[in-house]
Amino acid sequence: MEPWRTAISTSDEKNIFIRGYNVTSLMTQATFTDTIYLLHQSRLPTPNERRLFDAILIGVSDHGPAAPSAAAARMVASGNRQSLEAAIAAGVLAIGDAHGGAGYECMQMIAKGMELARRESISVRDAAHRLVAEAKSENKRLPGIGHRIHTEDPRTRTLFDMAKECELARDGIAFMRALEDSAREQIRPLPINIDGAMAAVLMDLGFPPPVAKLIFIIGRVAGLTAQVMEEYMREKPMHIRIPVTYDGPPPRDKP
Image (cartoon, rainbow, N blue to C red; front, side):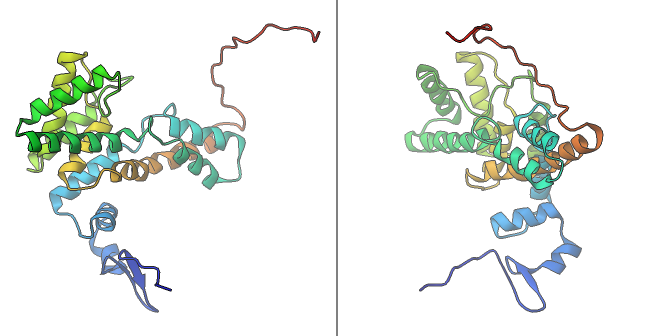
């Protein structure tokens, strides 16, 4: 039977290695962001890549207790006062296509747009225009743009400005800007949200699409731990009250 293989980490009696680097050297000479990058890219980031990657993790770390992942984590913490891990796991399980998953879809869309531009020798703007028209005709939501709270997501401008400053803004960011312009022309003003900004930057950093969801999870777990601790420390058990409007049958007797 063939052995189970991994290229990520190994250890012996005295050492632990991650992608060939001794973990003790990483502990003293690298950052946690460096190590996440190393785990996924098999190399340490440059200083500018670290800055951008760190900014992404900060940008997705928390968005208030009403976000589905935080609400789920706090709900479990409200009813289960003995299991931190259950509350955090509940928050992670609330992350999916509608919450935290748009970055993955957006990276796939960017890849599709860039392939269209290359294949048909058209501009990035023309490729974005086609994808918006296609989504509009099929009544599909475009991932990575639009926000239920922000008319302009403040994290997007920061990430894109940092990418430009670090000379790492490439086709991913160019495509998302073109998509935002095309959506404004064909649908309505829809700002690039954190999922779209993260997708664009990760694409420009050379990551594959599934990593967008994984990076969201890594960053958001930091916020979930704080949300759960606040629920334990500041609120009484079973104290969460969610507004509910009942619209079922009125009180009635069994026939």
